Length: 216
Length: 324
Image 1 (cartoon, rainbow over the protein chains, first blue to last red):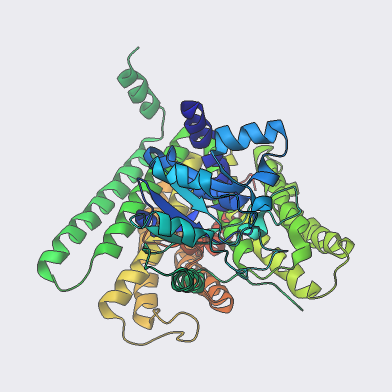
Image 2: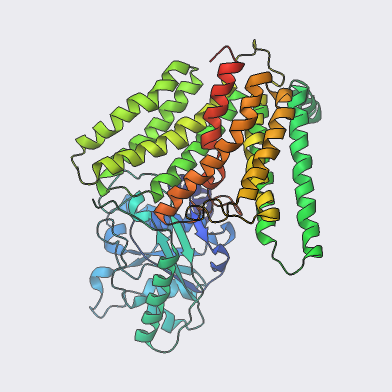
């Protein structure tokens, strides 16, 4: 299955992502090639996941596991099979957050197995097509705390919300920029870590090409 | 039959002059690579990473375009359709559009397909009027039907500017490939396209090199701060001489037509470069993307071609080609 996944990702998803987004990556060499490692990216579209799967070097691809909402991606058997087997998601049961159940257990298991887990700390895609970053959830800090040796790589994805905004079905080819930041490391405090991550993401955003709307 | 035989037969079918021209480009590029290898020994304090990236990218671009030209008109038309697509995608990603314009963006890609379809179908008159007349009217109508009038005129103009430069103007280079073989062409239709690319890119590089060597007086500091009078004039003279002396080898131009081409084409290349710079400055970016390492985006490389391709095509049609 892992072979089929690599085949689909490299032969179909990668060309598709290149066609739809141009995949303009800055500092590709900062992407981790082996786990455990955490990638923390902003989230504005399903294209984000596709794009990250497309830009990853083939040899590290089988290690890359995007964290995704269980309530959304496992809601029916077909999408569930596709999400698990092809995209390779680690499910996060958003609905059970705060119930005492450990919703990050699958992500922890993946990290323990030496995988690279891709998380979107905003928790959901941004509303509309704004490129503002939402409030970050602290799950990523808890993962970093559990694996203090795993680097956390901030990634800013610019423009994916224009290719396929939330609520749209037909994607439109437009260039996306992916800016990979320098690895962060667990520093002993959740609020301080989240601050550092937020600052790093905003710094990457400031370097991204402008996303201009004509507002009249 | 071995592969070697097939290759040699394939090359034997090509116009010999075209092969010599391509070999010449390879020699020039090899020379540039040699200079780039020696420069760090002479002036070790400077960084030559950018220069080396630029030259590496040139090898890739030359290989792709030479391959397409040798493979014939369908491959060359496909190659230019791809260049137009990449350029248009860069432009539409950076230019300000409205949230309601998603459908208009899709329609713009549809225009690209239709426009190149006319080249494939060899319908010259349809091609000529399609974008400047029918798309010019149709896109704003479509945008009016989308029901949003805020920023309407500026957005309609933005779409038209992108379609004319990236699709219509670059398409003329592809249309040259449809010149019939009955015309007396010294290096076939591919030779026409080859010389357009050679003259345009030689002018770009010559302006850059003269500017680096002698550049003192800025020509347009508010638009393109690296352009100098020395670079512009040096490039004009170098490219003009190249067109005058080498043009007859690859094209049927001679006399007055050739003289006009030699004088005007380098200026058009400069104009394309400066115009795209103004667009980039307005948008607030230095490069349109990082698609071509060392060069920037596809539009950064093809900016001068968006002006030289239609000019070259029309001078050719006026003075030398019966088909157009």
